[in-house]
Length: 640
Ligand code: ADP
Ligand code: MG
Image (cartoon, rainbow, N blue to C red; front, side, top):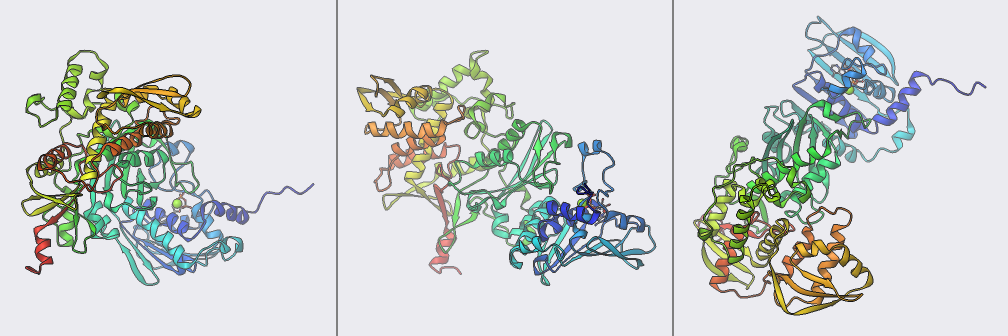
């Protein structure tokens, strides 16, 4: 008896703090969000010792009335919602009403605040959640909170804090995300007296990115803007060259809130898949705006995660938006004087020199995002659901296109399919490669490649081209791989593989397990262009192979491809086996260290220019780099 008691309020608050307030950065997050909810247009955060000693947050927001200040420290005290129904249309950052109470219960808090109307402000001092003092005080409109000695009364929590610099790093990250979420608010972070972040608050996201990450990054981002069925995707995404080894800069915002969401992450990374090397992650500031009813923000105590009612729709919108932006942007990397690749693409010839010009880069040339070619980047099984984005291009007479015989045949096939009424092919028409108008930037790059003069080949590995004031170096193996990859993939997705019969069938011995895989994966193997059948228990007879594969195709190659395919198809049957296709492309591509004739080079460049993504190999390494005449002249010290 008598062992169950209701906890006193201060203990209850400390327990709640355990959930929401994990470290100084959590305090900063909650406090900055409160300032934003109070309509501040300028917020300054000053920290000492990683925020452990003190965190000061000053805003110019609405402030609080004297009656409200003390109340705000109580648990479940909020001015933002009144009932559970309000949660369904939440537009403020906070709503749980527990942050202030939690923070106050584990620290010493001082607040000075004043509303526009009030004659005089209010100052309240608390310790461990108890109000020690409340008095009128002269103050400007807005609110200043000082949180001192965090976790002074909860040693267990205190022990888990990391080094000051680590804690400061977490705060830096929170402020960065808030600043990106709200380019209309000027946000400043001062660490040990030094200003480390200060955003302009001029409503312009690119200048906010510039101020947070610097010129290199701002130069290497592509704007994003896409709207579909109540979802709006905007922001900036990085070119492959500013990718990172982890997801820390893959930043996603849903209705103004920085969140992690696995569907959005998958949609982004799928779009980058063939442009980035494995274990590389893109830089993104991707903003998703969606009606509040379609998203549940109350699934995580610190609101770091969200859930959507229609995940497929979200995946699609994000994937299309990112793919479109990527394929519309010039991705040829420049080479700087030290010889390393840098953020600048040769297409932006007037590189802005000043910050002001930099900021004006919003309307970069050639980025058109409404006409994506999704065919390469979207899971095959989702294709038919896509609505029409672009007006199909007027068909070019087949004879006029610069295409090889097999491609001509492919185009003719497509047109036959498209012309036949009521066919499945017609339903998929809007997203066929042939129906999409390429973005002008890529078109420019293609034309430059096609018109460039062939200078020669270096090290039997790199093709050298000259166009205007630029030299292009093309990695012949990588380029060929990309061409093959796109061809095989196109044939695969159109279920129209080109095969060549073998004079005598190839006999491939398989293990029991491989045989089982072979039987399971037969339809995929066929779609890839093989004609193969089981012959006895452990033998397969290959009668035809994809026509792009060379005559040196061996039993081992077949086993490799089968192995890759079974790895890739695992579980998700509708997937396009890109890795397998890549393996095939690699096996059949021109190797480095091979001399090529002018004719061969011309053909390769023409095919490369015809690629959806001529810029990188399948794993994101560049196919083409450029060197400007100016850079050479600098090297030879003809100009300084
Ligand atoms: P919530 O944000 O979930 O409402 P909090 O505990 O974070 O709960 O804050 C409690 C209340 O204190 C808020 O609803 C708001 O009315 C008030 N408040 C907190 N910070 C500020 C601020 N910087 N400016 C004005 N009001 C604030
Ligand atoms: Mg709050």
